[in-house]
Image (cartoon, rainbow, N blue to C red; front, side):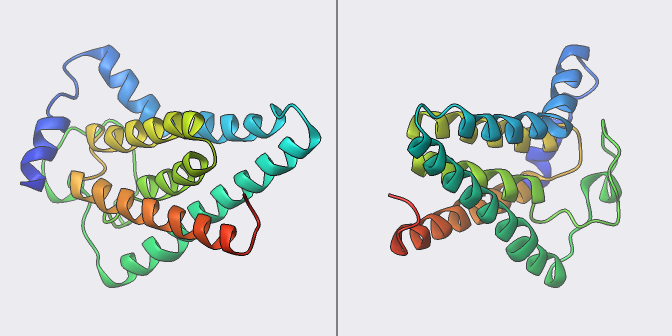
Length: 177
């Protein structure tokens, strides 16, 4: 099922130039816009107190993302190695990616879902945009041929759970309201 779904998504590659451009942009470059938008969110505070509150939220978002990606996901990489789709099958690969790095779970999905969940728990409206960006970045990674859908799903679940845990602990120790 996972490979079949991968084929359906990746099979659209190289059929429309605009979709390829969008897939490459979302998979490779959108992440910088997301991080930049998060940093601008701090500066958009109306008062000094709001800026400090937002700065804590951003710090927690990055903490959750780093723990999810370089803690939980890296631990899984150590025990479970899955070849990338372009290594295991004939695929349409739109971006260059290191074939030696494991595919499961998706580090991008893990990182950006953890970050987005913390933003969402702080501010539902802005967080919804970050969750949408995390989803688009993640799906684009399948489209360009570097992840299977299950890699994305696992990464998203890890990110969501880690983001929630970091937020819950921060609330418990009164770092956020």
